[in-house]
Image 1 (cartoon, one colour):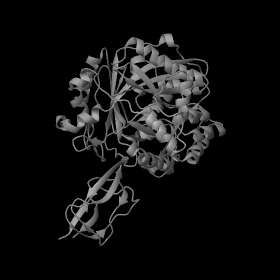
Image 2 (image 1 turned 60 degrees about the horizontal axis):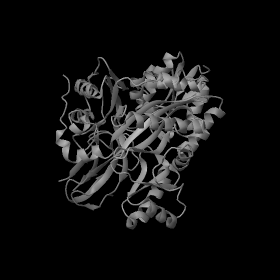
Image 3 (image 1 turned 180 degrees about the horizontal axis):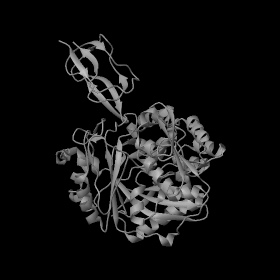
Image 4 (image 1 turned 135 degrees about the vertical axis):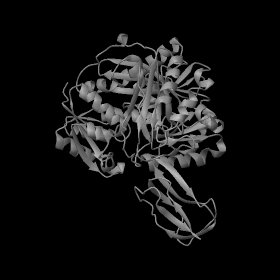
Length: 460
Length: 72
């Protein structure tokens, strides 16, 4: 293992997670941070810290030069980008390598290839992975685009090739609104991602979002089974589970094998996730995109397989081979993660910044809370609202949901509002208990069931 | 009698949609804050004229309870 000192180019709960994995591997840790994160838990836990800019992400966490300077200054020989920020920035990956350090992730070329959604679709097709019926690459002109849309059949999803993570998507219900929506989508994409290229996909009704965790070390490629992330609000996942409650053993085998086939065909190194839409009425699955980084919800895969994905990806980057092969990986029980955000589910999910007061962190068997909180911590308003991930693991899905109910009721965070009450209500819902969910389920339920979300009292 | 529009929470000022002297109707969006990557619009509590603005686009780390603007 070549890496001795790992620089974590991220913040919040994932920075804490990476520090923990690095410590267990015996590595020294360096955390770069903005002024707004000077008192954060990750900064407190790291061996060394370097302030790299003001609160604004563009001037700090996205500031490639500042991050590289911090790495040079501290003598770091590895850089872990976490998720978001520079994690899927191919130029950053290249720059780290050019500076003589190891990037914990695939190469810049791989990030470029799989990060461009249209080129990833092509790679999937070449690997024999079914893709959502759609355009063959990027749309070059509006006339062509309209013909393709007609061919696919409305409603059609207009997607930004440089997008991802649920962003840069518009839905055209008919030919009449297609042109104006496509123009809007392209302009938005150009503004948000620097690339206005679009591609089209057929809108699959009541689809389930199922993704497969894969790992590769250059010679071997494995899957660590799947996660279902169908419960989303504004295209952001809020409740994830492993394994999916809707896959038969046969479909699971085919789905997971297809993800390995893709990883193998592109020669993927590191941790990655292949995302699919699954139509449980027909049993068909379709590739939508690949994420060339560790994901927020990697935790539930760790719980059911016993694999430390973050440690494993650091080792692979450090020149080691996978510490296990496919036959060693098995699913044990069921795990669920819910994202505790600083949002008020009883007031339209308005953000709830403030200072963390007294807390009660849940515990007991099969309970894990990956967070960066401490009493007195002032949540910065410049970054996302994720406070922590509450994860439960139990023998069956039914007992996991029950454990989740107990755990969410136990969690207390005074001083701000959190999304915890939403999850309490969901654990009592019949559709959820029966696994009858899809990507539109949560927003539809919220439209007429907000009254079922009840407050959780502060602790004295 | 001036209506003071104060900030409910800390956050950043993303868009300011009115200027001093503008007439507004109850419910018009006056400004939009950006808090934890979310857009939070503030509406005029009543009809009136903007008599004072204490915020500007791009302001960062504004404090809870600060008076953003005044409507008469």
